[in-house]
Image (cartoon, rainbow, N blue to C red; front, top):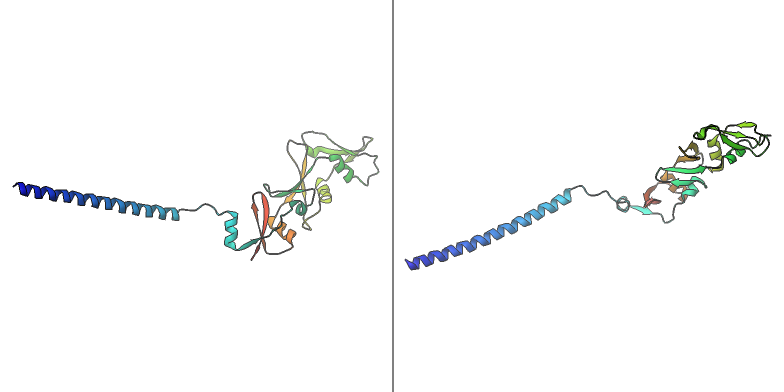
Length: 203
């Protein structure tokens, strides 16, 4: 009986050892499977938006080396406002606008501007040095004389800036047209990268 008990006990220990090894193997397999599932899910999840450089490589575009001068395109002294997508120039000297508007007038100089309502920039009138009223002004006309039209045929519109003593000459900024105008090439593409206009040509 003692011999039988020893044999049985030894058998039980072997069974336990086998069970431990089997359990360990099951755990390892489960870990591997879970890892595979995680990797697969990560691969299938939507990836972050492509950066400019990735999209450029995908489209097979070649970056043109020269920097784009938005001042040249907009017509200096205007500058490019990429945030608003406009070429802009501020008008702060309204007396100059009056002198421009009434340059051919026989009224005594200097001609200056005065506002009947200081909170309303559209209420400005031009006056001669003797106090005689010359009349109002066309701000957009002034913008388009002072600022060169680039590209040809483009025009500026003038608009008052609320709660300020400024008008702004503005027109839409087309960054592709900026590239075409700068490099005198067709079939170009443009991107805004780190606050600058970058031009690309198809390879």
